[in-house]
Image (cartoon, rainbow, N blue to C red; front, side):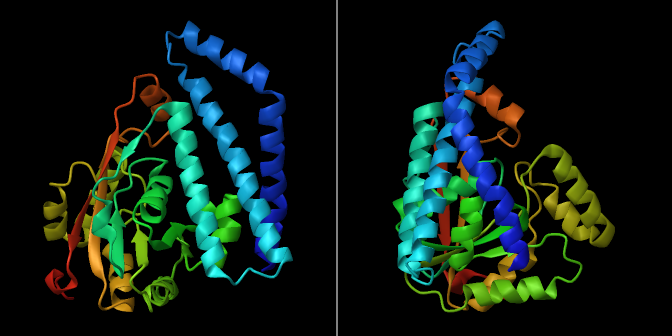
Length: 300
């Protein structure tokens, strides 16, 4: 509790300062970034667009923190339904801001595969926007209640920190030397899921890049050469880490499995990649899913 309070004493004021500064200095940064983009031959103004999204993000984050604070003042921190509504509002507004500022649109016509629950959703991880896209699809399109497995580093985001810790999520310590406690937490996270619930995990563990793929294959080859040979065929994803997914399935023995992947976000794993992507007229990002009934999921 003390570490959470200390962290929020840093991140929440920093968020408010960022929102105010981006607002006050908007005429300056809009002019300078637009000029820099034009000089570099980028008529779509990708730097300006990215900062404009950052501006929207800062104020939407501020609104989320203020709403969470109001819930605390009115003693409603335990009311999950209100926090799920806040999460749905936050993801939908951020997605709207992404469309308005960058032109990126998501086609999630296959989101019906997420219903009904319980389900374990295995998402591809290739960009900085994957958590936002999956949250929007799950909460706004499929109208489900997600239970996220997220890396602990995301606690630096004040809204994810405060609201995310009031909802049934788990912030994973990827540096933990003993994984038993983390896996037990994932089994507990999935336990008791019902018809509106879906557990969400990114089995790759981090954003996929060619360098990370080579490194992961080399590590697997040291322990299991046969598995490494199978994993070589994967060209667009990292070799999955199965322990977290297995723990979620153990926690909810009747949950189906849903695979989710997207086409159109490749290369958005760094800010440089995002700028290069925004310099071109974006095509709609296709969000695909495939549901596997639990009876068809191999055991063990």
